Image 1 (tube, helix red, strand yellow):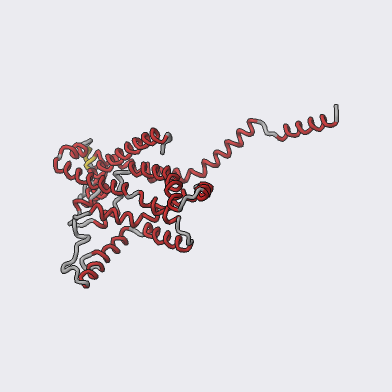
Image 2 (tube, one colour):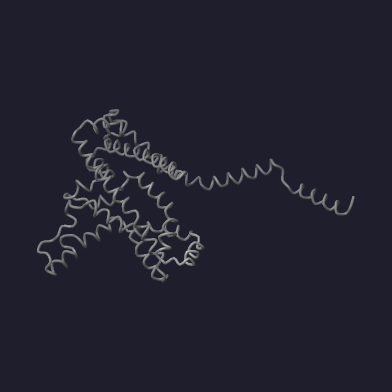
Length: 327
């Protein structure tokens, strides 16, 4: 046997000795997987605690619940509250108006969902870093302001004795205060504008992250071919952001009935209640103000089921159109 063959055999034997058996490798991989699973256990517990455990409360929709008596002392009524939703003309008309408000504001939100996309594109085109950072910070800050403080700002500016009416009156443009807040005119539009003002900068963050991931060679090639600034935005940036926008759009459609409550709760008054009362606020008003927790639970239960159906419907559309699902 030659010296080279001996060296080769010794090296092969050494490699075989260092290679762990298959069972040992499998055990090591299982241990790593178990450790990774332990890392997500706290988050799974939080999801269960706040998202799934509250579903036990749906049982209240089957009782004529009285807080003083508790669930055990309340009468079991079965599907009475669900039947009342469709059998009472007054209730049907009220729920119809609430659904109209909810869908109208949701569709206006979807129509304005392109604004964060456009804002992110133009913000990315600002060359001065200090100015770009200042604009992004100022437009993101409102997202961290509670709706109570937003209403305080709105009241200070647009109430009958607010700043805007004061300026218009001093300028001689009006003789009586303009009712910006105490009116049922254009309620859907004003609520949408406040939502846009509060969430524009925050909504642009995900698009700015997507822009940062675009291959810079595309811009360099376009610049060599003589493309201008707006041409690069239209033919490169916008198409690259479309997948992200479509996913967020589909999720917005799946959440048509989830407008939230805080904004409409603080802005509601006796003048605009008919048009500002969305489904979440309606559930709150029935349960807390109307002291009918069972009816509120029944409506909230139906809203959750419809939202799940919408989610799976949109997921099916995404899978058919884009070839991949979102959940």
